[in-house]
Length: 243
Image 1 (cartoon, one colour):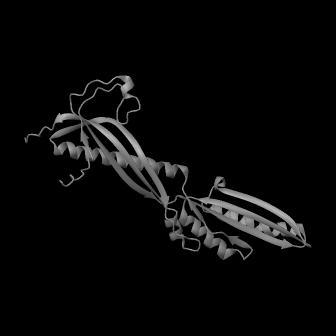
Image 2: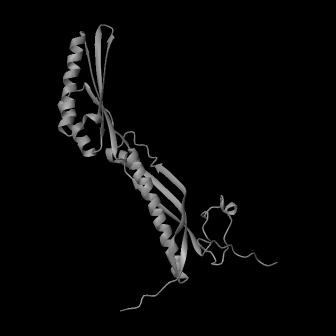
Image 3: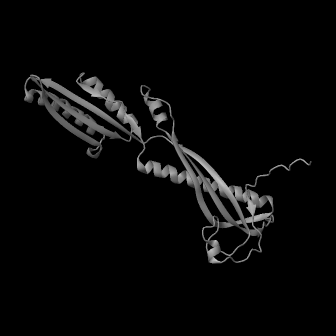
């Protein structure tokens, strides 16, 4: 019994030039075919790309609290520290739209407890660290600074997704050019380009008690894109004559 023939994989295909004009109903739901396009010689390829982006935002919360026998004393203690925090933030260029403040007072046993939480969004991580250092140095233990939470703004993610798709298309075109060059043909314009698959993920490492740099690394997003593309073949490649 003869041995089975080896399986070959095709990463690109050249369509013959004498294909007939297809009817509209034949073109519907056919991947890689544009409605009304007259069949011609084409090269079909796929392209992939991968990019990553570090987070561009960090959210930091600062909690100020005080417990006093009188409500006015508890308020005064907290508001004094709160004014200093707001001043430190504004002096370092943090705008009001990136600052959220909430206040609460309650009575516990024979004392009044006043608490205020300041949540700040930073787009400059060095500025965030400078603010934290100043507050730790100047304020007492009644002020608690949370660990920063790093994340991506919608604009940052959209830019990343768009760029990785463009890179995949560029890779597909280069592959098509190589195929055409190999068989002595010249690549024409794109007939159809379709994004087939995208994937997104973050580093799964646990960074609950890690450094700032490790937290940033853990929040870094990776994105891949796979596209399929069909290009026209213009004809034989013309060799340029030397002058």
